[in-house]
Amino acid sequence: MDQTEKPPNLILTKTIRIQYKYPSFIVPSVRYFDRPIPKREQTLLNFFKKKSAPSKPADDRPCAPDSPVSIIGDVHGCLNLAQSLYEKLGAEDQVVFVGDFVDRGENSADTLIWLRDRQRANPDRVTCLMGNHEVMMIEFLDDPAKRGARWLSHGGLQTLASFGVPGAREIMQPDELMAVSAQLKEAMPDGLEDWIRALPTSWNSGNLWVVHAGANPELPMNSQSEKTFLWGSGAFLREARTDGIWVAHGHTVVDTPEQRASKISTDTGAYHSGRLTAARCLPNGEVYFIQATN
Image 1 (cartoon, rainbow, N blue to C red):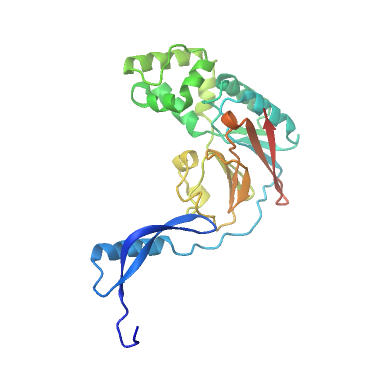
Image 2 (cartoon, rainbow, N blue to C red):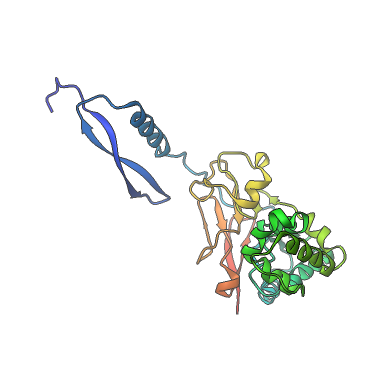
């Protein structure tokens, strides 16, 4: 191009996938045209330029809780794995379960009772967090006609069976849902429903936070919503935090547990993989993983 010529305008023509080290982004490809860029295309171009701009570098401080802590991933009714893994942990460790104790596995009822008993026996050592599956279970108890179907399609049928509630199906009429919800309430041991409802959504020590699903990397931890802790944030898996905070979580199944980009991932899909994982985090910054397997 002659230096006296005006630079050509750019216009979006299609999308291509460009693989960065972490993560993947969809970015626009461009083609040169000697005409003004239509307003709509310019808006899209600006949007993608902003989205693909380099992010701030991650803070490189190590994960350093105030004392040793073991964080156990989603149990999902796999009581034998939870009991086996619990016995492998250091006697001095704080123990935090990340939630999703129910559904999919066969022993949700006994898992809830066992966890409640462990926490009551060791209130200063054992913490059980709320997961999104506990939220769906509570919705089924509170408003089965309108909100119960979601739970049944995400493993609630297995939980009902574990409590000895018969006749449940994934698709039921409102009056049937209400009847099954009442049966579940009746089948639950005294105090168990209240214990589930009172579960916290986060735990923290030093620069380590533990939640069920994730946290928005652009917000301080004290400014996060419970919905984000329980259901996650789209940016959580894509972006590292820049404030030195590490977030240990479950919810998103990984084949191999890992510590990277300010996150510690612990959910190895126990109910289908036969592997339940704990991340052991030490004050000196060391993090390693312990597993129980079928």
